[in-house]
Amino acid sequence: MDRRWVGTGGIEVIPVVRAGRQVLRVRRDGWLVADCVSVAEVARHVDLADLCEVVELPRQRGYEAVG
Image (cartoon, rainbow, N blue to C red; front, side, top):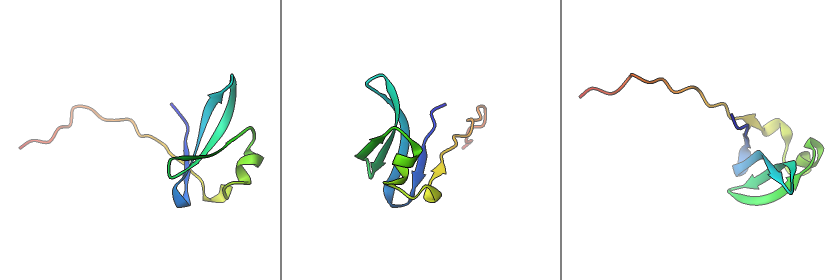
């Protein structure tokens, strides 16, 4: 499962691999803000208290609309 955090103002933080190293990519409204090597660096761009982890729930199969 891929981890992802979202925040106010269209902020999204996702882990990506860049040049063989994992970084935290900060995007605002889909536009790249920064690739950060630490959480402290992410904090320079966004308020960490505003971030919420996106959790994808498992999809249940077998329940379909009837009609």
